[in-house]
Image 1 (cartoon, rainbow, N blue to C red):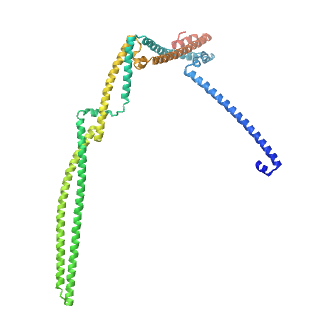
Image 2: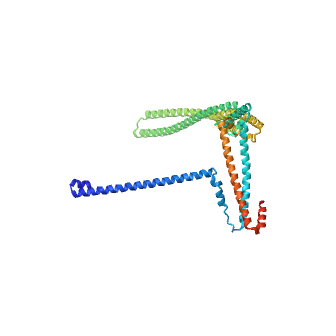
Image 3: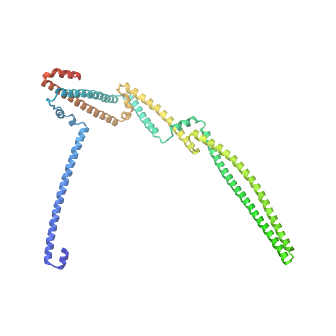
Length: 438
């Protein structure tokens, strides 16, 4: 609009244009301030969110590491800020149960603490083993690591043969090489039989077609002979009528008709004789083919039964599968042999390392069979020691925590005794029922 009014040269419009431009600038400035304010608010919200996430992360970290919020005495004080106006027996019962639970927890933790401490003591004993024995120990540990890795490879082997197939082939292991050859011959013979049967079936069908063609020819000759007989009789009648009607000499036409009839009869008899001869020959061939086909079918059935029996016997469906299964069996047998040797050697070095560690009176030498890497790798041993120290520190904190819980519970019971001297006997009986003596 401002451009159109500028083109028209109106001063008034130019003024309006300046005003619109000023309003637009003011509007842009306001929008800019608003965007700046929104951005500041967004940054503030993001900062608050990051601070909140950080606080939550610190809180989670403290909870995971068993920090002061769990083991803080102030929290324990708050937890045991009892209302003594309540039923004293109920409060005492709750505190007695808490004492018993704390005792149970501390007993379990002390056993675990002692075990961890013994592991750390074992590490010190291992570090103090003389160099000569330590070298023997390290060598045994290296062997254990090597054989353990080989065992894992065997267990994760790609050779896959079912247990039932493995056991079944093992039963016939000595005769399988010859059985493979026999099954291959059976399958080759079966293919030859199938070809012979196919050829004989085609030959039989061709002979059946030929016999049917000869039968059609015989039927065609019968039709021709009937037609010729009718034609000859008709000609005789016509010639006879012509001879009587016109007194004409019909001797030659009669002779020609008779000659034609004789020629047709001779041709028909000859062709019929040839057809019968060919039909007999064809029938003989058909009988021969059927006889041969029956013999081949018997061989087919016997060979197929032999194949099916061997397939079921060795749990396969073809020679190729049987051969492949046999190769898998040989590989699996070889791996089984190596696995057995590996296990024997691994057991030997396990006994060796346990015996060596027992000489230095380790509390639990068997556990080092699963930490053999730490024996030969100082960094791994430092890591194991660090983990044990962290575990022991956690256990110590938990023991202290439960001990403080127990002390606070006993203090609460004592306060109730002090505030209720008239119920002292009942309270003592209640304590004795929980096995607690103050």
